[in-house]
Length: 130
Ligand code: MN
Image (cartoon, rainbow, N blue to C red; front, side, top):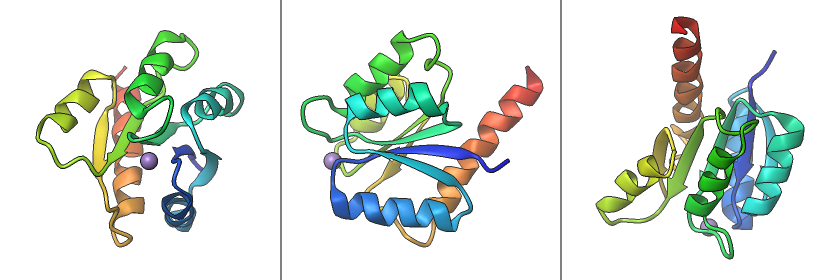
C-alpha cells in the first residue's frame, strides 16, 4: 500500500507545489490548510507521516504539533516541519516541539519528495527494530 502523507500548509502556492511533488513521488496525499483541519484529517485518515508548515495563522506548527502529541491516537505519527525561518534556534525548537525532522523553505522541487520519503524510511526502520 502506498504511504499516506498529510500535508499542512496555509499558503496556496506552496500547498499546490508540495502536493504535486509528493504525488509525483508516488505518495497518497491529504491536504489541510490549517492546524485544526490537520488534527481533524489526521483522526480520520491515519497518515503515515505529517509534513507541516511551521508559520500558519492562529495555530502555528509548534502549537499544532503539541496538540498531536497530546492525543494518544495521533501522538505516534511522525511530524516533519517545513519552515523558512532563518534563525539558528528554529530547528532545535521544532525538534523540541516533537518534530522528527525539518525541511527548509523554499522547498527544492528536485529533492523535496525524496526528503519526505527518507523520513518514511526512518520510521519503517524504527518499527522493524521494535
Ligand atoms: Mn505558512
